[in-house]
Image (cartoon, rainbow, N blue to C red; front, side, top):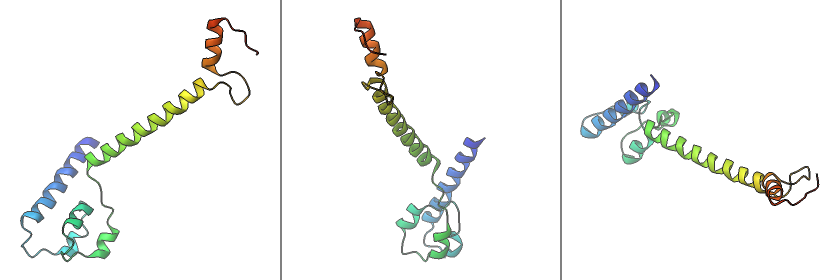
Length: 119
């Protein structure tokens, strides 16, 4: 259900901005357009000379396009995974743990080679 809403919202956004762009020469009331929640900052930056109501624009939350949200979320997940992997590798391969015992992988290697280690 959420995907359908995101899809409809993105279609509404593209339709809204495309319609205004297509008929930019018409006498639009930009005071009300500035309040539209589907308005994006990219569109405002593209046409900064239009008579925007900057007070309304500053109150607008500027909902992002769903594809941009998914892209940002994916980048954040990948970054989190890299941090976890780095910490995990450090945890596995560190020679000593915080309590002074031999780390997991060095202890395993010592055990496989038959090297005695203090407990």
